[in-house]
Image (cartoon, rainbow, N blue to C red):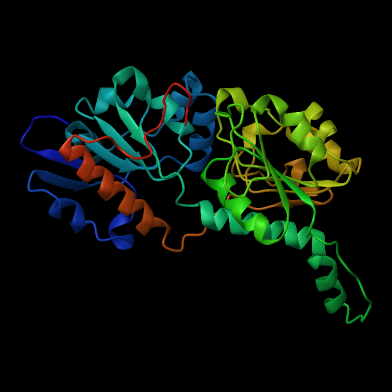
Length: 349
């Protein structure tokens, strides 16, 4: 932490003062000065930043800072927000730490934090319970074929239509982070066998609620043994197009694919082909390579593909939980202690 008498905290998430008690920030320490000044990229730019952080074209698209925003960044030592400007150190030379409002932090690659020595922490784990509930909900809806039952009701037809038994099936979780672990806990409650992989796997490694933990090099083995595959890994350069044509081919015929990770981790054409050929029985994706997904996208018409607009994380208590992480980290920062949820900028998560 800087030795300056004042610590300026820039609260940049729009409308944050309506969501949480921002006065608690200043109440932590008399040295703190809070500045409420919204800054947020639009969804198109945020998504593009994750894919092309060094793009000149994107820099040209970036909104020009208002005088108020420029003044807030110029004074800030700490930033709480969802986004940051390109090369943020140029507009915020005193910035030392950013607390991201989400778990994914790919958009901050364009801000060149690593080169500037700026720390980045995320909100990993906050959305995990609601995202895991969403995953289980999608699995149940697909296997029990609720859509067909709803159609029968609309048609006023009393025709028996029965779904599949979930108990005893195998779920493969690609990426056993906070979200993957939350999915595993709920899957075990449904008597599913759980196989998962983790980038940091070592021989003999185990994990709660996971029957078998594999390394990332055994991805295709996991895919081939799973009735349902859930993609929950971190979005990094190494995981781009992780689920390509070969990966979908490795999946068990008739299996189900669910993506609650990042859109650029999936070859969308390969996914569409796997569904059209009926190699996969169904898929659900909460993300897309291009967000918002344009109306003319062919994905909308892919059979048995359930699309949701990045909506798997519920907002119930979401901002309150992020704010608690931030306040705890702010206390640690002021005391010179390590920060929780510190991101490895070299790895991108």
